[in-house]
Length: 300
Image (tube, rainbow, N blue to C red):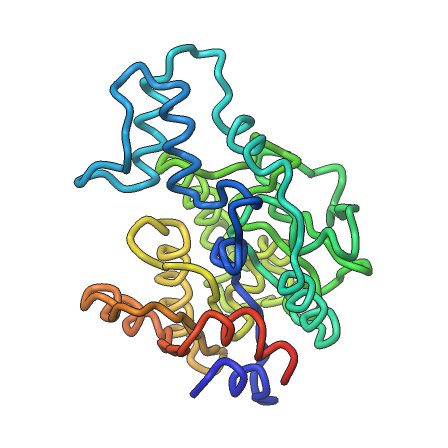
């Protein structure tokens, strides 16, 4: 099975989950630094009171590395989230960004992205829409999206949703382990709190507490992961996949597929393969990054 086969499968209700690999594809020196780890190392070099680092040391995850920087920065007045956003200020969409967004728009497929910048949406709109402006918070803009129309059903309509925050709201940026734990806590309340309004009650599937957010897509669509490592640093996403698997075990008739599409030259670790299999994610290997970011969107 290949990505193009998944995209052409009319039995699926797909949603794309896109990571930073899309920004690193075909990037040049002129594009500047577009690697999360190198961007964090840049901030460490500028702001940490500790010794400079050429890479995140062994024994610490990238998310923990951010927290370490936040704890050891030279001044409490330094806003690391804002400065991280500043490193992305000149990023612009390339042909493959536009191609994927155009495909999703034409097929009415939602996009979830772990990226903060707006390269996927800026080709068709710079305007953000909030499901409920009165309840909007720039700390967790989970009910905010970019689209060419007003969305009523997040799982059934095209829109671009930012899982880990967005550049225009620097307080929303989730970089550290403490940030991810906050996201887990918020999502847990939406998924499990309440009586019939909680997702796991099995009732009012289209009226549960997270219905107007991107969380609704996670539990109601066939997910296609592209440009993500889904490794141990992706704490929040992995937790969501565990909750998703538990939900489908309770309600098997609602089960949706998930695909992790990658073009890594190295074989996935035994642990990662075990995790993905246990949460119902099928691994799909492509021979090149062109098969992830260019060819399938023109063929399907």
